[in-house]
Amino acid sequence: MLIAESIMAQLQSDIPYYTCAVGESNQPMLQFVDRRLKPYLTSLTEAYRSSKKLGSRE
Image (cartoon, rainbow, N blue to C red; front, side):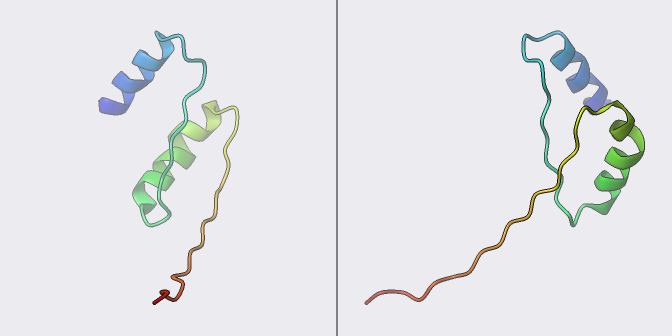
């Protein structure tokens, strides 16, 4: 019930929006968000990140 408790705490706070991130490798949580939270969300976005290790300077 940790998610329910955090949602209730958010509702009682002065902060109007809740933001969270779920890693793409966490498929069970992505499915949970899609099935249970998505109908109540005002927005849902995807973010992409890339990185490349650059050569070292000597």
